[in-house]
Image 1 (cartoon, helix red, strand yellow):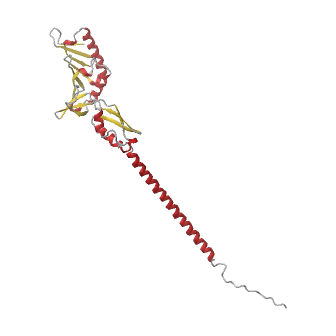
Image 2 (spheres, one colour):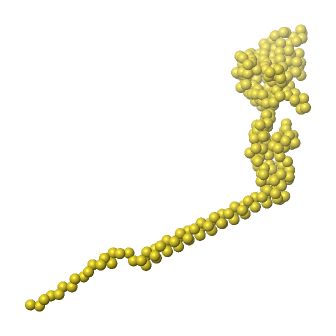
Image 3 (cartoon, one colour):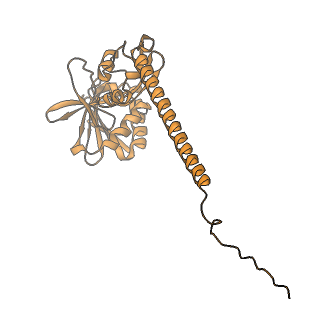
Length: 279
Protein backbone atom coordinates (compact mmCIF):
# COMPACT_ATOMS: atom_id res chain seq x y z
CA UNK A 1 0.00 0.00 0.00
CA UNK A 2 1.11 3.41 -0.84
CA UNK A 3 1.12 5.80 2.06
CA UNK A 4 -0.60 9.13 1.52
CA UNK A 5 1.06 12.23 2.78
CA UNK A 6 -1.19 14.70 4.24
CA UNK A 7 0.07 18.26 4.20
CA UNK A 8 -0.94 20.17 7.20
CA UNK A 9 -1.36 23.93 6.67
CA UNK A 10 -0.52 26.05 9.59
CA UNK A 11 -3.07 28.71 10.44
CA UNK A 12 -0.94 31.67 11.35
CA UNK A 13 -3.91 34.05 11.60
CA UNK A 14 -2.32 36.52 9.16
CA UNK A 15 -5.50 36.76 7.05
CA UNK A 16 -7.44 38.51 9.81
CA UNK A 17 -4.74 40.86 11.16
CA UNK A 18 -4.89 44.61 10.07
CA UNK A 19 -2.36 45.66 7.51
CA UNK A 20 -0.17 48.61 8.58
CA UNK A 21 -0.30 50.26 5.14
CA UNK A 22 -4.12 50.44 5.07
CA UNK A 23 -4.29 51.99 8.51
CA UNK A 24 -1.84 54.70 7.60
CA UNK A 25 -3.69 55.45 4.40
CA UNK A 26 -6.99 55.96 6.26
CA UNK A 27 -5.27 58.10 8.91
CA UNK A 28 -3.75 60.47 6.38
CA UNK A 29 -7.05 60.67 4.48
CA UNK A 30 -8.88 61.76 7.63
CA UNK A 31 -6.20 64.33 8.46
CA UNK A 32 -6.35 65.71 4.92
CA UNK A 33 -10.16 66.06 5.09
CA UNK A 34 -9.97 67.82 8.44
CA UNK A 35 -7.35 70.25 7.16
CA UNK A 36 -9.53 70.97 4.11
CA UNK A 37 -12.53 71.69 6.32
CA UNK A 38 -10.47 74.02 8.50
CA UNK A 39 -9.18 75.78 5.39
CA UNK A 40 -12.73 76.26 4.05
CA UNK A 41 -13.89 77.64 7.40
CA UNK A 42 -10.98 80.05 7.54
CA UNK A 43 -11.64 81.26 4.01
CA UNK A 44 -15.36 81.73 4.76
CA UNK A 45 -14.57 83.62 7.95
CA UNK A 46 -12.10 85.82 6.09
CA UNK A 47 -14.63 86.61 3.35
CA UNK A 48 -17.26 87.41 6.01
CA UNK A 49 -14.89 89.79 7.76
CA UNK A 50 -14.03 91.50 4.48
CA UNK A 51 -17.69 91.88 3.52
CA UNK A 52 -18.59 93.27 6.96
CA UNK A 53 -15.73 95.74 6.82
CA UNK A 54 -16.84 96.83 3.34
CA UNK A 55 -20.44 97.30 4.51
CA UNK A 56 -19.36 99.33 7.54
CA UNK A 57 -17.12 101.48 5.39
CA UNK A 58 -19.90 101.93 2.83
CA UNK A 59 -22.45 102.88 5.51
CA UNK A 60 -20.06 105.42 7.03
CA UNK A 61 -19.44 106.89 3.63
CA UNK A 62 -23.16 107.03 2.78
CA UNK A 63 -24.11 108.64 6.10
CA UNK A 64 -21.53 111.36 5.62
CA UNK A 65 -22.05 111.93 1.91
CA UNK A 66 -23.51 115.25 0.77
CA UNK A 67 -25.30 113.39 -2.01
CA UNK A 68 -27.74 111.96 0.58
CA UNK A 69 -28.25 115.24 2.44
CA UNK A 70 -31.91 116.23 2.88
CA UNK A 71 -32.70 119.15 0.58
CA UNK A 72 -36.50 119.33 0.32
CA UNK A 73 -39.33 118.63 2.78
CA UNK A 74 -42.83 118.52 1.26
CA UNK A 75 -45.79 118.79 3.65
CA UNK A 76 -49.40 118.22 2.58
CA UNK A 77 -52.68 118.37 4.47
CA UNK A 78 -51.74 120.95 7.10
CA UNK A 79 -54.28 123.74 7.47
CA UNK A 80 -54.15 124.90 11.05
CA UNK A 81 -50.53 123.95 11.69
CA UNK A 82 -47.95 125.98 9.80
CA UNK A 83 -45.03 124.54 7.86
CA UNK A 84 -42.59 125.59 10.58
CA UNK A 85 -44.75 124.05 13.32
CA UNK A 86 -44.81 120.70 11.52
CA UNK A 87 -41.01 120.74 11.16
CA UNK A 88 -40.66 121.60 14.83
CA UNK A 89 -42.90 118.67 15.77
CA UNK A 90 -40.89 116.32 13.57
CA UNK A 91 -37.56 117.66 14.88
CA UNK A 92 -36.03 117.64 11.43
CA UNK A 93 -34.42 120.17 9.13
CA UNK A 94 -32.70 120.28 5.76
CA UNK A 95 -29.08 119.19 5.60
CA UNK A 96 -29.56 116.03 7.67
CA UNK A 97 -28.50 112.73 6.19
CA UNK A 98 -31.34 110.71 4.66
CA UNK A 99 -30.14 107.41 6.14
CA UNK A 100 -30.00 108.84 9.66
CA UNK A 101 -33.61 110.05 9.65
CA UNK A 102 -35.79 108.23 12.18
CA UNK A 103 -39.09 107.94 10.34
CA UNK A 104 -40.89 106.14 13.18
CA UNK A 105 -39.94 108.83 15.67
CA UNK A 106 -41.11 111.59 13.31
CA UNK A 107 -44.51 109.94 12.82
CA UNK A 108 -44.89 109.45 16.57
CA UNK A 109 -44.04 113.10 17.25
CA UNK A 110 -46.67 114.19 14.75
CA UNK A 111 -49.28 111.80 16.16
CA UNK A 112 -48.67 113.24 19.64
CA UNK A 113 -49.94 116.64 18.46
CA UNK A 114 -53.58 117.22 19.52
CA UNK A 115 -54.36 118.64 16.08
CA UNK A 116 -53.08 115.73 13.99
CA UNK A 117 -55.37 112.77 13.41
CA UNK A 118 -53.02 110.78 11.19
CA UNK A 119 -49.54 111.32 9.72
CA UNK A 120 -47.35 109.50 7.21
CA UNK A 121 -43.68 110.26 6.52
CA UNK A 122 -41.66 108.69 3.72
CA UNK A 123 -38.20 109.14 2.22
CA UNK A 124 -37.66 109.82 -1.45
CA UNK A 125 -34.00 109.25 -2.23
CA UNK A 126 -31.66 110.90 -2.69
CA UNK A 127 -32.73 114.15 -0.99
CA UNK A 128 -36.51 114.51 -0.43
CA UNK A 129 -38.91 113.89 2.44
CA UNK A 130 -42.70 113.72 1.96
CA UNK A 131 -45.12 114.31 4.84
CA UNK A 132 -48.88 113.67 4.55
CA UNK A 133 -51.03 114.96 7.41
CA UNK A 134 -54.70 114.59 8.24
CA UNK A 135 -55.66 117.24 10.76
CA UNK A 136 -58.57 117.24 13.17
CA UNK A 137 -61.23 119.81 12.37
CA UNK A 138 -62.68 122.02 15.07
CA UNK A 139 -66.43 122.72 14.92
CA UNK A 140 -67.18 124.06 18.40
CA UNK A 141 -65.94 125.61 21.57
CA UNK A 142 -66.64 123.60 24.71
CA UNK A 143 -66.06 124.49 28.32
CA UNK A 144 -64.15 122.05 30.48
CA UNK A 145 -62.77 122.75 33.96
CA UNK A 146 -63.49 126.47 33.56
CA UNK A 147 -61.42 126.57 30.35
CA UNK A 148 -62.51 126.76 26.72
CA UNK A 149 -61.39 124.10 24.26
CA UNK A 150 -61.79 123.42 20.58
CA UNK A 151 -63.97 120.37 19.92
CA UNK A 152 -64.63 118.12 16.92
CA UNK A 153 -68.00 117.33 15.35
CA UNK A 154 -68.86 114.91 18.17
CA UNK A 155 -68.01 117.39 20.88
CA UNK A 156 -64.71 115.73 21.81
CA UNK A 157 -62.05 118.19 22.97
CA UNK A 158 -59.05 118.80 20.74
CA UNK A 159 -56.94 121.53 22.26
CA UNK A 160 -57.21 124.49 24.57
CA UNK A 161 -58.01 127.87 23.04
CA UNK A 162 -54.97 130.05 22.48
CA UNK A 163 -55.11 133.82 21.87
CA UNK A 164 -52.47 133.60 19.14
CA UNK A 165 -54.80 132.07 16.56
CA UNK A 166 -58.32 132.39 17.85
CA UNK A 167 -61.04 130.99 15.58
CA UNK A 168 -64.63 131.92 16.43
CA UNK A 169 -66.92 128.87 16.56
CA UNK A 170 -70.31 128.00 18.07
CA UNK A 171 -70.28 127.18 21.76
CA UNK A 172 -71.50 123.64 22.44
CA UNK A 173 -73.32 122.68 25.64
CA UNK A 174 -73.85 118.99 26.31
CA UNK A 175 -75.77 117.60 29.25
CA UNK A 176 -73.14 115.62 31.20
CA UNK A 177 -71.37 114.72 27.96
CA UNK A 178 -74.47 113.10 26.48
CA UNK A 179 -75.71 113.79 22.98
CA UNK A 180 -72.42 113.46 21.06
CA UNK A 181 -74.19 111.35 18.41
CA UNK A 182 -76.85 114.01 18.01
CA UNK A 183 -74.18 116.70 17.63
CA UNK A 184 -72.51 114.75 14.81
CA UNK A 185 -75.88 114.33 13.06
CA UNK A 186 -76.57 118.07 13.34
CA UNK A 187 -73.15 118.92 11.89
CA UNK A 188 -73.66 116.47 9.01
CA UNK A 189 -77.11 117.96 8.31
CA UNK A 190 -75.62 121.47 8.33
CA UNK A 191 -72.85 120.40 5.95
CA UNK A 192 -75.48 118.94 3.60
CA UNK A 193 -77.32 122.31 3.73
CA UNK A 194 -80.51 120.77 5.04
CA UNK A 195 -80.90 123.68 7.47
CA UNK A 196 -81.91 127.14 6.16
CA UNK A 197 -78.70 128.55 7.69
CA UNK A 198 -75.04 127.53 8.05
CA UNK A 199 -72.96 126.61 11.08
CA UNK A 200 -71.28 130.02 10.87
CA UNK A 201 -74.66 131.62 11.70
CA UNK A 202 -74.95 129.74 15.01
CA UNK A 203 -73.69 131.26 18.27
CA UNK A 204 -74.38 128.26 20.51
CA UNK A 205 -75.97 124.82 20.51
CA UNK A 206 -77.36 123.07 23.57
CA UNK A 207 -78.32 119.40 23.57
CA UNK A 208 -80.60 118.37 26.44
CA UNK A 209 -80.80 114.98 28.09
CA UNK A 210 -84.13 114.38 26.32
CA UNK A 211 -82.50 114.73 22.89
CA UNK A 212 -83.73 118.20 22.00
CA UNK A 213 -81.39 120.70 20.35
CA UNK A 214 -81.59 124.42 21.04
CA UNK A 215 -79.68 126.79 18.74
CA UNK A 216 -79.21 130.52 18.71
CA UNK A 217 -78.88 132.31 15.34
CA UNK A 218 -76.98 135.48 16.21
CA UNK A 219 -77.64 137.38 12.98
CA UNK A 220 -81.40 137.13 13.47
CA UNK A 221 -81.50 137.08 17.29
CA UNK A 222 -83.56 133.92 16.94
CA UNK A 223 -83.69 130.75 19.02
CA UNK A 224 -84.57 127.42 17.45
CA UNK A 225 -85.67 124.20 19.15
CA UNK A 226 -86.15 120.79 17.53
CA UNK A 227 -85.98 117.07 18.29
CA UNK A 228 -82.68 115.39 17.36
CA UNK A 229 -84.29 111.96 17.40
CA UNK A 230 -86.38 112.92 14.34
CA UNK A 231 -83.90 115.28 12.73
CA UNK A 232 -84.76 114.75 9.06
CA UNK A 233 -88.55 115.33 9.28
CA UNK A 234 -87.91 118.14 11.79
CA UNK A 235 -85.62 119.98 9.37
CA UNK A 236 -88.15 119.50 6.55
CA UNK A 237 -90.83 121.13 8.72
CA UNK A 238 -88.43 123.89 9.75
CA UNK A 239 -87.67 124.72 6.12
CA UNK A 240 -91.36 125.02 5.32
CA UNK A 241 -91.89 127.44 8.18
CA UNK A 242 -88.70 129.35 7.41
CA UNK A 243 -89.56 129.80 3.74
CA UNK A 244 -93.07 130.96 4.66
CA UNK A 245 -91.65 133.56 7.06
CA UNK A 246 -89.21 134.71 4.43
CA UNK A 247 -91.97 135.01 1.89
CA UNK A 248 -94.03 137.14 4.27
CA UNK A 249 -90.89 139.07 5.32
CA UNK A 250 -91.52 138.19 8.95
CA UNK A 251 -88.29 136.34 9.72
CA UNK A 252 -86.66 139.39 11.33
CA UNK A 253 -89.56 139.70 13.78
CA UNK A 254 -89.39 136.10 14.98
CA UNK A 255 -88.00 135.42 18.43
CA UNK A 256 -88.31 131.64 18.61
CA UNK A 257 -89.22 128.67 16.40
CA UNK A 258 -90.12 125.39 18.07
CA UNK A 259 -90.58 122.21 16.04
CA UNK A 260 -92.13 119.16 17.69
CA UNK A 261 -93.50 116.20 15.79
CA UNK A 262 -95.50 117.45 12.79
CA UNK A 263 -96.13 120.88 14.30
CA UNK A 264 -94.18 124.11 14.59
CA UNK A 265 -94.72 127.16 16.77
CA UNK A 266 -93.43 130.64 16.00
CA UNK A 267 -93.00 133.26 18.72
CA UNK A 268 -92.73 136.91 17.63
CA UNK A 269 -91.01 139.66 19.55
CA UNK A 270 -93.37 142.40 18.19
CA UNK A 271 -96.83 142.96 19.61
CA UNK A 272 -98.28 143.45 16.13
CA UNK A 273 -97.87 139.72 15.55
CA UNK A 274 -99.53 136.99 17.62
CA UNK A 275 -97.22 135.77 20.36
CA UNK A 276 -97.57 132.12 19.36
CA UNK A 277 -98.64 130.85 15.99
CA UNK A 278 -98.96 127.21 15.03
CA UNK A 279 -97.72 126.08 11.62
